[in-house]
Image 1: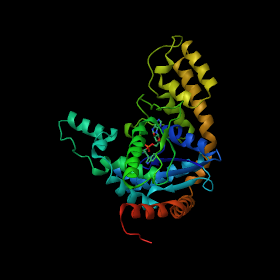
Image 2 (image 1 turned 135 degrees about the horizontal axis):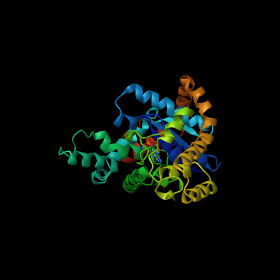
Image 3 (image 1 turned 180 degrees about the vertical axis):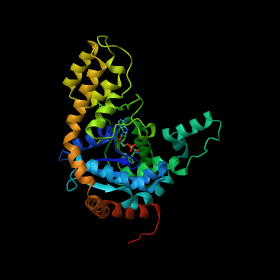
Image 4 (image 1 turned 90 degrees about the horizontal axis):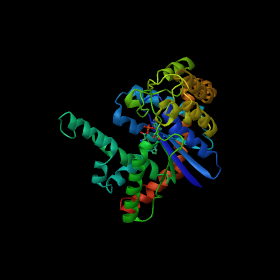
Length: 334
Ligand code: TYM
C-alpha cells in the first residue's frame, strides 16, 4: 500500500492553514483503501520554539481533537504522538551522522534566524539553538522511519521533504536500501493560505484564524482581513486578494470561478467577506461540535494516542531500528 504521512507541530492552536494545507488533504488521501496513513503530533518539534510545558500539552490535545473531529478514524489510520515513539530520536541520531551540515546551513528556518541576526548586527547564531539547526533531521526521521511514500504538506515544508530524501539517500548509499525516498504532495487550491494580514497564515505571525474559533469570532476575524481600498463597483484583482485565496481554498472550482467573475464585476469587500465566512462556516461547523465534545475528554484522546503508538512501535519502529542498528554496526538490543 502507498504510505501517506504527515505531522503538525504542537506549539499552538490549530488554524485554517494547518487544516487546508495538511489535515484535509491527508484525510482525503486516507479514504483510498490502497493507502496506509500515518498522522502524528510533532511534540519534539514543538520544543524547538516553545518552552512552555502547559502550552505544548494543551496544543497536543487541541491538535489531536482537531484530527479526530475532522474525521480521522484511529482504527483505520496510524495516529500517534511523536514523543511516544523513542525510535524516532534514536533514528534522528543515525541520520545526524550522515546529514551534511552544509545542507542544514541552507534550511529556511535557520537561514531566516541568521538573516534576522545580521540585520540586528548580532552574531549569526545568536539565540539559535542546536535544535532549530537540527530540525530537518528530526523531521527526516519522522518520515523515513515509516518509509512514507507521500507527505502532504503546505509549501513551506517542501524543502524539509527534499532534505529527508537527501539524508535517506545518503544512508541507503552507505548502509544498503533501508529507506523509501518520500515525495511531497501539495494541495493545489491551497498552496500557502494567507493570514489576516496577507502574509502566510502562521502561529509565528499572529495572523491566524483558529480552526475551531466560535462562529461569531470566525466572522469577526474574517471581516478583519486586510484588503485594498477599491470601492464597490470597482473591478478587483482576484489573484492578488487574500479574501479570494481563502475563498478558493474552501470552495469547489465552480464556486471559485463565479467568485472570480464577481471580483471582476466589482463585488464589495463586505459582500465578498460574508460569502467567505459562509463557505468556511459551512465546512467547519459540522466538525466544531465534535471538537467541543472531544476536547472535554482528554483521557479518551490520551488512550487513543497511546494505543496508536504502542501498536505502531511493535509493528514497524522497533523491528526497523533493530535492523538499522545492525546495519551501522551497533549491538542488537533484543
Ligand atoms: P506546522 O506545524 O508548522 O504546520 C502543519 C502543517 O500545516 C501546513 N501549513 C500551511 N499550509 C498552507 N497554508 C498555511 N498558511 C500553512 N501553515 C501551515 C504546514 O505546511 C504543515 O503541513 N515541521 C512540520 C511538522 C512536521 C512534519 C513532519 C510534517 C514534523 N515532522 C513530518 C510532515 C512530515 C511543521 O512545523 O508544520
